[in-house]
Length: 149
Image (tube, rainbow, N blue to C red):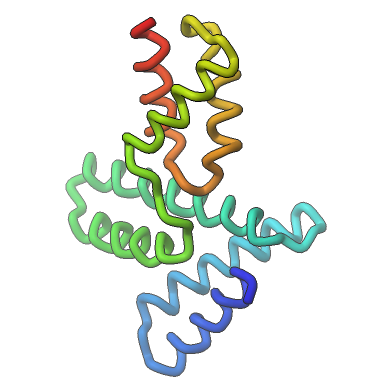
């Protein structure tokens, strides 16, 4: 079963069981997927859908940051719950130690010695860790490793 089929099946199940929050989250995800497919004129595969899901999580994290500044705990709770529901469809996220191992290997492969190599290192690491790590965390780890050289 593809990821898209799984999302559709879970949406139908949520509608039947009356889980309104889950239903609303899944409807939003399906709308985002359909919008990307329409805009790009393609049918997304699992990798494309993972990209959309990661983008949706990023949007909700931004919502949480904005809500914290505005003092809106209600919005924070809703966005956090949506993130948790979306993360169920993502591959297992790597720990910082696992990410560091990959970053070190890529730095060694590329022979990067300073911050000038950050773009190359980030590109290679993110390609390897697609969907398994948050880009912000990877960027922080790469920056720490390259500045420490």
